[in-house]
Image (cartoon, rainbow, N blue to C red):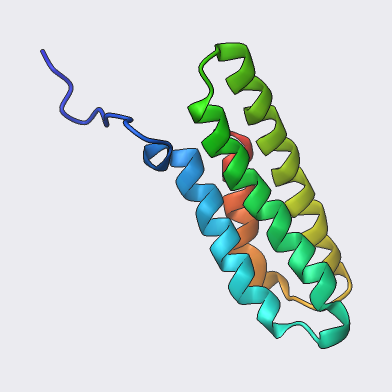
Length: 114
């Protein structure tokens, strides 16, 4: 019996982890527009860390050898933790509220367990 719910992965964009990471980076790009000019630089670093997560997932998918792929997935995991820490800084310093970052924190945590 064939499982019709099973999704075929043909490209890195089909990976659920890629989709979550990409959503995080887009949401953060929108969020940092609220920062004052004095903090734009730190906000850009936050987005760059999120984009690094996305890029490492894509690169891992494209690697030929399994060990190489795992290495890039670990890099993506590290970048995701960096995003978490940087976003937490902005919440703790009251630049963003928990309400406006709740979904992003959920996605960051969801990405950690995938």
